[in-house]
Length: 354
Image (cartoon, rainbow, N blue to C red):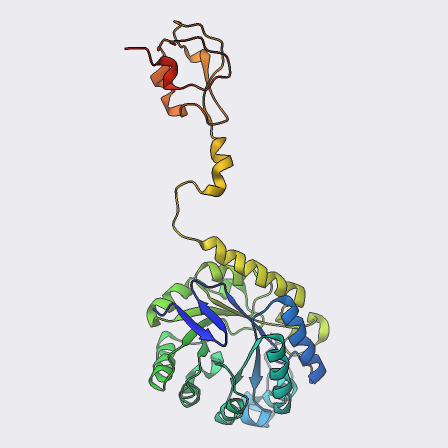
């Protein structure tokens, strides 16, 4: 498996801290000023990258309000809208892309996008995007994947709703079309998603199946699922970002606010650091604690020539005496010198014995 890839100046891999992506999605509320505020807030929270989405209502669906083009699901955040109306509200106008890219560059953030058709890829190439993402639902759009992979840019593919066969077809299409740097994201395409549906044990299996780096595109509330994913090998975490969940935007309800994203950045790196390596011997940082292990000490004053009984010795802290396991071996021995209470038991006390 490839251990690392590069996106811009960032190294991403199992030996690197998690790469944290803030997805703006539709949380700009059709305001460029709001979008730019999101970028700045994400920078302040410590994220590494901003992701946007590149489409128009007309490039992603048909302008109809009937049948499958209408959202009637009672559980949907978007019930009562047509797909066209939803995407009209959520899409980021293409003329906003350049100022967003420019601000990200100024702030030292990676900025990239999810294209939803070939015209979006052509447009993003003009902006010299550093990498691409394929959305979960577009994983079956093999022509789009081939178009993106042919750019030679690193590619991130979300796998929500996908079968293992479909993932394999997408990976094959990407690699055969020129993609050499690929990351697969475990994803649950529900909004919001339940932690019970995250199935994070899939992460190491996904990596083993395709020999790729893996990460998480997360729609659950909070940061717990993301931290668990890092512990299971996720080197990328993407979550939706908003200034306020109460703003009423299309994705606000399941997005993280700035203070939560800051916690995600800090705690995900801590989780990664905590993985460490297989280790059983005492660490240098444990030296003080190690010195306070229990050991055998004399609990009585003894004169030279006295025989040690059980009542004369105790297992107490600190650890300067013989280990407690030696207790049965010293009972019945004769001390070779005077011993004061509080003296650590050592073999030297009995050294003149034959």
